[in-house]
Structure formats: C-alpha cells, structure tokens
Length: 211
Image (tube, one colour):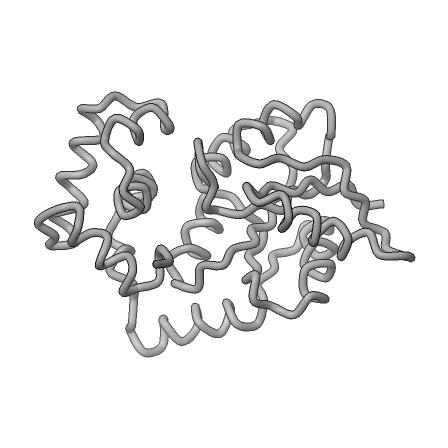
C-alpha cells in the first residue's frame, strides 16, 4: 500500500479525494489529513507517509514554505502538489521548492491516483495540461512576469496580493516586519507596481490568485 497524507484547508475537498483514492481495489491508503502546513509537519512522525498530496494555497505557512521545510527534513516524504492555479509560475515554483509532481485540480479524476503511483516510485509527474502550458511558455517566450521574483519574494507577493498585511506575513513566515518590508520594496521594483492594489490586479490578471 502507498501511504498518503492529504493537505488542503477545505475538509470537503479532502473527503472527496479520500473517497477517490480509497476506492475498492486501490493500493493507496490515506493515513492522515491536515488543513495546513503546520498540522502536516506536526503529524508526520505519526503518519509516516510515502507521499503527501498538498494544495499550495493554505493559511499559515502556505504550500511553498511548507515544501521548503519538508525538503530540510531527513525523513521527508515525496510531495505531489494539487492546485487550482493554472499560471505556469506555480508549477515552476513548486518543483523548484522540492515537489516531485504537480497536478491541476481540473484534471480528470483518474490522473490523481496515476500521479501518486508515479511519485511514490520516485518519478516526476506533471498532468498533460500543466506540461503543455510549461512547454508552450518556453517556446513562445510568454514567461510569467513573476519569474523575476525570488522564491521568498514570490511567497510574500502572493500573500500581499490576497490582502495580507506586512505584520501578518511576517508572523506566518517567521520573518521580521522589516525583512518583509524589504521584500515588498524589491517586489514593487521588479514588477513595476506602485502599491498593493496594483500587485493584486497583476496577480488576478495572470491567474496567480482568483477573484
């Protein structure tokens, strides 16, 4: 059996994935669930999963920061990111942060078990839609403007775009407010944005956040 933990801040979503993965005859066992990165990190010693299936948009640490902390662990499980975001910045960031695979929530249901099996075997996995989007962005030069941001800047940017304050971001990411302020300055310079409202509009236009 492949031991799996589901991480998503929506309980109904987790329930649906659990039912899908534990269908009769499946070799996948859901051994735990978490609503955020903190709960995942706390439960890992008990669950000991082979694969973590994780959303990126969560309260608290957030998906990318959770990935970085997982990567630093000696007993880190393999991670498959399951996200509703279609902008190519997200799969790139997730893979760079340590994920072994990325699947869009809009993919066919049978894609998820297939992806988990591949990741459990140590293989990389991208669903067809994501793989095509990444390939086309390389071919036609339509790179995301957010490629200029560092990993930490991108994490701060997405939180700013969702209306979080500097103080809230600093607390969630265990940073000082002055460090977050420095990131904010650099983000505005790189994206040619004058204020937080312009950052939000940019994120909406490119599908980094949803309205």
